[in-house]
Image 1 (spheres, helix red, strand yellow):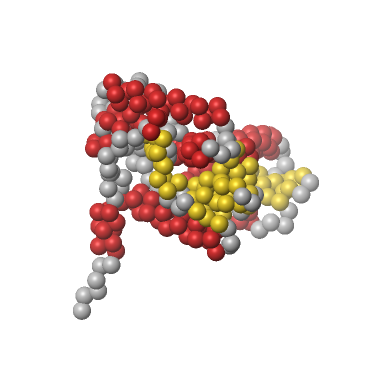
Image 2: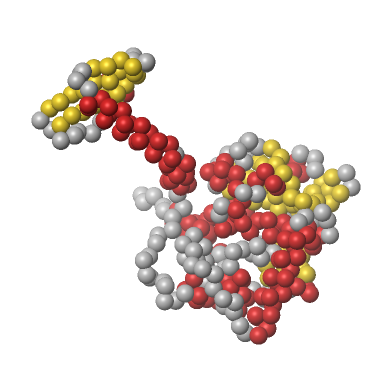
Length: 321
């Protein structure tokens, strides 16, 4: 008897469930993005937008599940959570949004936006672990990725929608379920910038024009749904495969963090070995370190280890002619 393929039908169904709909307004979730031209294309060329690959679609759908569960947890913890998934519209600026919820605390209504994050992104932002963070503590970390940079714009617009002075971002770690709360005080200057941006976009849409391109950015442009519309001549040139691999990304970030340390190590290592090769002795003990020089037909090798370490812990020098 054949065993059914359970995976492929689920993937096909999930892909079929993802739809790209006409966009006739400025979406609160996007207005804080890096490229104003893309925001105009989202209004005027929505049907040309590239559909995400199935891996991205699944990530988005799984994020929705985490966000619903976080709101349910708030209710179970005794908080008054109202206005869940309420549609908002600011007609004069042609801005719309969907507010995740409002938390009522001591008579104050606070707009709440829930964001799920991969474990390595969550860990890179919330260094103290689960808990409550002021926006200023995590501002720099939220500037590191294009999609993270949109979050401040979204919660700022929700604060303006609701005429309140503060809002909350609730970040969920997809891997562990850990929660971090970011308290965001309303930045009126930034809010004004977002409203003026909406007006500029509305003007382009009405006039049938588009803004100038931003300088090409490898992290922004090829990932944009309107890449082929904006830069048709660039597509296919020097192709880049954009992958979602949290382990490799974490290793690359770790590699970058330790680059300076590696340079310091290599400089010190080179000086020590030059010194050792110039000596006539074959072995030295310097503090807790043991050094040994070996000469063979291939050149000179310097071995370095701490006293008491096994042979496998030795750091061998390169052969010198």
